[in-house]
Image 1 (cartoon, one colour):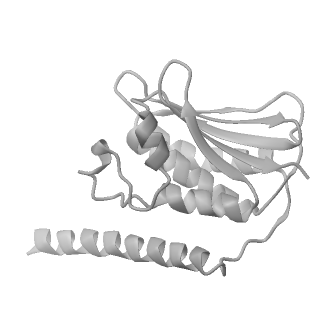
Image 2: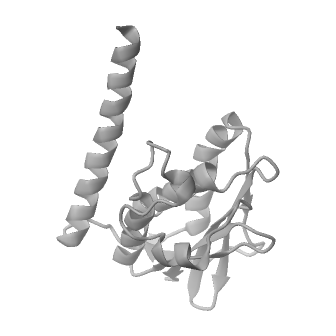
Length: 190
């Protein structure tokens, strides 16, 4: 009986996350998802996210590094809370899919590119095929490795992309030099 109760509790938590994600996506479709656009210090957002996620990574036996430019970054026009939420989604995905026994480090970084501020989450895992890159932001898409993982529903990256779109930014995926994936958020500097 205690084992059955534990299974029920886990499944209830899993379904609660799914319902929450579905409601979140439905509100973006209805265009009533609130974003509080301000001039955001992106380096501060990155530092806060790094400090929040570092214990999680260490607990999993993975390294999380932070790379910021020597010069202060320009502020970006964004919603700091939503931006942190997106970075959390990207870090969770990197921890779930971008870590292998030989490469267990993830890098959180930022740089300025002209009038844009770019934030990246890079891993050195198995990477994505060209076809997977086309589909990875679609709702309910899960790569082969994720199909067996009942903790992921294939909604995180679609939510992340919608959140960045609502902030007038872009979220893309590219290959990490040497193998793996880099997810890049591009926001307008303010």
